[in-house]
Each structure stands twice: as structure tokens, then as C-alpha cells.
Image (cartoon, rainbow, N blue to C red):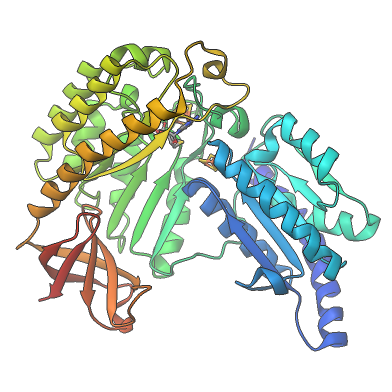
Length: 471
Ligand code: SAH
Ligand code: SF4
Ligand code: F3S
């Protein structure tokens, strides 16, 4: 399809946008206040970025945002289902919303995102939660204006879940959470089918955006004050394979590195099985690419990795880490680890501890295995008892945290370039920001520094963040 064609998909929505705008203006004239929306985002950065588009569309339709769910006229939950607790939270909150709707019958309740792409969830919603007004999935976000218009017109529930993705829709209005940094999708979906993971079932097959579309978006962001971008994909290392003119992720990075005015490039997630020498070279050569790599290992046991369908061994992963550290000596590495995958033995678990000790991560996202209906691992024998998993999880943190502390100690005394992000939640005079290597830094300063990259000398290490002083 040509660019013109897919861009016109959102064009079709513009009538609905103005229709709802009129409806909201009418309300404002009658009541002297605007209708408000509340948006709750769960899950990963992919969802967070989708929410920026949802918020962009809602503002275009004349809604104001509120952080107070109680006073909202429109509540939208952008859901995640990667682990069970994310789903439980949504069901819990839906019960509470039922009461809110009793107080305000005009309230519109909207569910979208990964969770509702599952048939079992739709069945559950129909059975117990039929007061939800609008439900849509991960493939048709751009249709939100039309779905709201239909709900208002018909007065009955609108459920629009696509089983498969359509064309990539460009140019949705977006409201960025931060002025000076932004996420940019480079691809959608996942083809890897790790046996524990629900994502390929709810986000569909891999599809990459055209390099020109990505570059255009980045140039516009930079013109609007953005200094740092985060390129998003479930497996960025397989970017571009399905394009008409195949482009590798490393080639894309080199092109992005040329964008004038852009200062930092980050990306996630890199799958170890597809991490190429070409990518390591691009990371070494491009001055804007941050010295930080998120390389999820999941487990240190080659046995478990095989049953997870990760397509690499412990040795291969360690080989990659060695190559990366050699090419970029001051790089920081982070990872995702799952404990308690079905059939994981104490020996397998020891392999995970061993890989943690060998790689020496600066950050790690650690998870207890959660059974996801519909994935192959859910039917595997030897699901691990909860107390065993819990014990392993605690033992893992006991190995991991001292290493994180040691890695951060090596930064005390250094002067780091910090992009100032925000004031600390506890203290208005403390600013927080990120170093190039993704270390979180707190230091005394004022709000006017937000958005600047400044030099900070690290004076103390609090394991999960560093304390610094401006120099
Ligand atoms: N595409 C990314 C990760 C997306 S999900 C990648 O391949 O690395 C983020 C993380 O959630 C995964 O890396 C994994 O560690 C964790 N995860 C996924 N499914 C899970 C499950 N069923 N139980 C526990 N953790 C899970
Ligand atoms: Fe899930 Fe694996 Fe795809 Fe990551 S690569 S999203 S863990 S299936
Ligand atoms: Fe992300 Fe959760 Fe969906 S991790 S892709 S929001 S299932």
C-alpha cells in the first residue's frame, strides 16, 4: 500500500473528531465546564506510547485530562496481560467503576490494549462486566473517535476487536508525556513465540515502519524540542526484514544518528538471538547511541532457554556480552529474568545465578513466571510450587542487588552528562535525570534545568540511583 493510502485511514476519522468536539462544546456551553477523561496505562512502553496517541485524540475531541478518576466523564484503561496480576488489577478496578457509574450514569468506561485481544477476556467481560461502554484492541486504536461516536449514537456497547492487524496508520495526533524525550515505534508485533509469552497473540506479527516515516517523525520531534528518542519494538534486531526494500536495524540507527539536533538514541528490546556484529559496530560508531543495552536473558540455563524457545544458549549469550563489552568498554547492560519457568530445577536456577555473576548487570527486571492461557508453557508439566519460586526469587535478588551496587560504586567520582527529567516526588529541590548509560541520578537543582543535558559529579551510590552535584 502507498503511504497516501494508509495515512488516509486517520483522515476518515476526522469527521468523527469534529462531531464529538461539537458534542463536548455543547456540554461546555450548558454546564460551564469541560468533559474530563482519565487514562490509566498498564504494561510496557509500547502501551505507554499508545496512550500518548489516545490522549492526543481525546484532546483533539475536546476532552480535558484529569488525574482524578472520581471526577472523570470518560475513563479509559489501556491494559496489559503479560502477567496475571496486571489482569487482576483491571477486574478489580472494573468493580469499583461500576459504583462510579451509579453515581454518574453518563460516565463512559473504555477498555483497550493487549488484555482485550483475548477471547477469554471478552467472554468474561460479557458475562460479568457488561456495563463497559467501549472495547477495542491493539490493532485499531486510530478508530477511537468513530467508536465513541457510535456509542453516543446507539447508546449501546461498542466492541471492536480485530483478529489481525491492518495497515500501519501514520500521523495520529500525539500528546507527549515529556517535552524533551519521546518514544518512536519502529515496528509492531512479534514473531518469536517464546513459550511463556502472550505478546505475539495480542500484538500480532512483526511489521516494520518505513525508514522515511521514522526519520520524518524524528525530525519533527527534534524541531519540537526533543533531545532523546527511544526506538520501540518487541525485537528491534529484526527490524526491516519484511520491508519491500529490506533495511537492517543497524542501517536505520546510522541514518537516525545523522539527524541534526538529536542528542541521544535509545532502543528496546534487543533479542539476543538476532543481535548482529553489524549492530555492535553501529553502537560503537554512532556518537548519539547511548552506552546502555537492554538484553533480556530470561534464564541462564540452556535447557530452560530451549524450552522457552529463545533460540540461544547460555554460552552464546555470554559470547555476545563479551563482544559488546570489548567494543564498548563503558557500556551498561540490563536484562529481564523469569524465575520459576515450568520444569526449572535447582541446577537450572544456579545457572541463572551464574550468568548474573558473569555478566554483571547495572539493572534487572525480575519476574516470577506467570501462567498465560493459550501459551505452550501453560500446558507444560512440572509447574513450580509457589514457595519454591518465591525462595529462588529472593535468593536471586540477594545475588543481583550487591552486583548492581558494585557497578554503581564504580561511577562515584565520575562526572556524567545527565538529561534532567523532573523534580523528585519527595523533594522539590531535588532533580532527577538519566545519564547516557541510563543510570538514574538525583541532585540538588531547580526546575528550569528540566530538559537540559548538564554535567553532574557523582558523590554517592544508593544502589538503584546515584546522588550527584552539579559541576
Ligand atoms: N519483547 C521483549 C519483552 C516483552 S515482555 C523481549 O523479548 O525481551 C517483557 C518481559 O516480561 C519479558 O522479557 C519477560 O521477562 C517477562 N514476561 C513475559 N511473559 C511472562 C510470563 N508469562 N511470566 C513472567 N514474566 C513474563
Ligand atoms: Fe514475548 Fe519473546 Fe516476543 Fe519478547 S520476543 S515479546 S518475550 S514472544
Ligand atoms: Fe506490553 Fe503488556 Fe502488551 S507488556 S505488549 S502491554 S501485554
